[in-house]
Every structure is written in C-alpha cells, then in structure tokens.
Length: 226
Image (cartoon, rainbow, N blue to C red):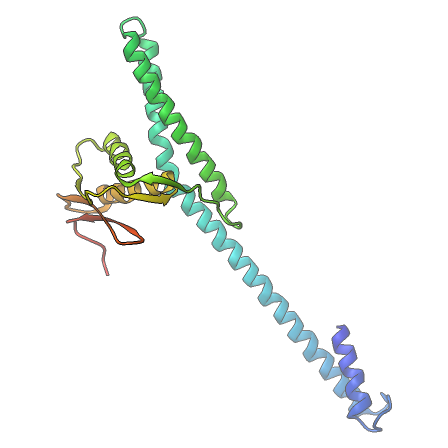
C-alpha cells in the first residue's frame, strides 16, 4: 500500500499535468491514481496468496514425507518388539525348566534387540526434524560384517527365504552409518519377499570400485510395471 501511494505521488508529480507539481483536482489524474492503486493492491494480494499457497504446499509435502518415512520403518520396530515379548514370556512361563545358560543367551538376544530399538527410535526422532539436516553416525566398518548383520536380521524374520550372496573376497572397509545401511538393505530384501510376484530366487550382490561400494538386490519376480 505504501509503495502504491508513493507511485501515485511520483506519477502525478513527474508525468501528469501540471508537471513537477501535485495536482489531484483534474479528473484524469484522479482516475489514473485510482487505477494505479487498484492494480497495485490486486497484484500484491495475488502475490501474497501465491506465496501462502506455496508455503502450504511445501508444508503438506513435508508432512507426507514424514508420514511415508514413519510408515516405512514401522515394521522394523514390530519385529524386535515381538521377539522381546516372546522371549520374556518364554522365560516367565518356563523359568524353572530353562537352564541358566539358556536364560543368559535369551537375555542377550533381548539386549541386542533393545539396542536396535533404541537406535531406531533415535532415527525416528531425527525424521521428525526433517526440516534440518540429519546427522549420520559414520563409522569405519568391515563390509563382510555389515552384510552378515543384514542377512542375520533378514533370516530371523524370513527363515524359509534363501538369499544368494555374491560379494568380493577382499577385505574391504566402508565408511557408513551401519544401522541405516542395514535398514535400507533389509527393507529391499523384504520388499522382494512382499512384492516380487512369482519370485523363486533372491540375490544380494555387492561389488566395489576404487572409491565406492555398490549393493544390488536382485530377484526373478514379475518386476515393476513401466
């Protein structure tokens, strides 16, 4: 509005007769001033609405991303929770018939699943702050140990699904966040189980170049429509 008023005064002073003087007594000057104010206000209003719509769209997209990510990792939380509940119930119901060694092994399994849950929850909290950069906890890890962890976790959930492994025999270290890489690879393998219609073979292929390591999850299912 201030810009509109200043523009009206500037036009009246510079370009309207009498020149270099303010005169709003002439009908032509009044009409020009009114048109200029109307156009400026309309333009400003439209611009403000467009900006508000863009902000609303971005907010909706971020909320959708949050919801999709939370849904994507929710099944990762159910598996360890089910295991912990099952082991705890077994110990309580059969306490006297289970040896001390078996109890220790079962409790160690609960401890490992609890650690997994803690880190998963920490990552979920990071997802809720998606507006900011998510800090990755990168460590130097042995590639073979990373793959073993992925297959061990996958086989716990899908003991009847064989995964063919193809990877280098060389000793390879990678810099990565092990939990997130495990989660991604496990999700890819699980997606094949759930969605690869007609699948009879599931393969995890790992190969390395000078600076990068590549992971491929391959199945012989129906595939994804183009």
